[in-house]
Amino acid sequence: MGNKNFIGYLILVVIIAVAAFSLDIFLSQVGVELNSISFLNSEGNIIKTLQISYPLWHQFLSLLANFLYGLSAAVFITVFVANKIQKDQQEKKEQELEELHNAININVFDSLFKTIIPADVFEVIKHEIIENKILRKNAKWIYDFSEVDDKILCRMTNRYEIHNLSQEDVIDPIILELFSLGDSRYEVIEAECISSDKKEVIVKLDPNDKTNNKNVDIQDSDGRLVVEYSVKVPAKSYVEYKTVIEKTYDKKLNDTQGTKVPVIGADLIVNYPANYEFDIVSSMSNKFRLITESKNQKIYSLDGAILPWQSFIYYLKPC
Image (cartoon, rainbow, N blue to C red; front, side):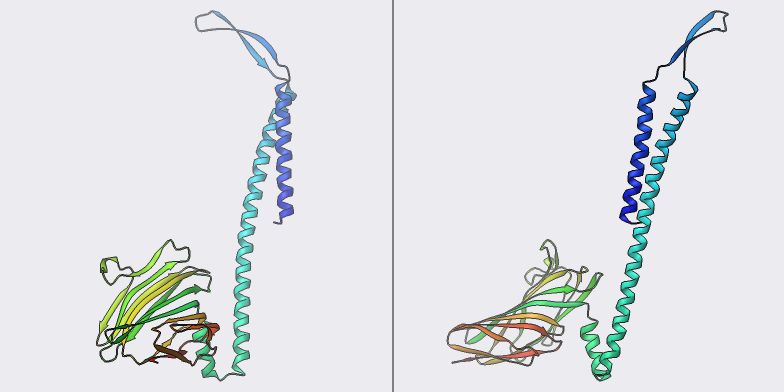
């Protein structure tokens, strides 16, 4: 039912209700006749009483007023219910059309790209990127290097937003695997996921008090540290993710930072002692740009996408 029809029926309901109310007002101003009636009670006494008498036309108009009240209510309820049913059917039809449209687009996309990309390569792209409902955005990788007992301590802070691109809630399993070499070991200082409105803590890791942990599992054996948890991301929304990890290196070091999932936009902030040099070698599709540099800090920025399994190597050595 269109908006114009719905409004038209509402106007009709108002007119009928006003007509019924007007009849009520008119009938309330009409005079009545009082007739005296005498009758005998059970004891044989004569009882007199007064009876109100209405003209026949008055009774007819009163019945008509009640009919109009009922008619206006019936029309209003019928129109409201019909409009609600039509709206639900319209939404269902639009959803079905959208699903059909998406299915057609996917088939056209598959057919088109399979003609220009080898099938094996296309399947990887389709699985890793196209069908991925989760996307990480606005990554911030912060490296704080400091000298501790003739070693280099690196505190790595990783932040990004986990966006759900679909129309339904999605569970995103996050597995952080860290492999230690030699005497150098990783230590997880903090891990946390919070809702986009910052009102709900979804995941929390507290190494100092395991009773504060929430929805997280840790496995540490044979130089392999695994931090695993699942994050429920609401439809068309996102959560904020943060981990803080520490690792000790020799004074001359190189290591790798990568991602298993697509990332859109990243900043790399590096703080290091003034008597050291820092540099990176990237194997990503989009390159980091050096934004600012001082004797103990470099800030890089990357616009665009980082594809799954792409990474960069970073170096730190004394001057």
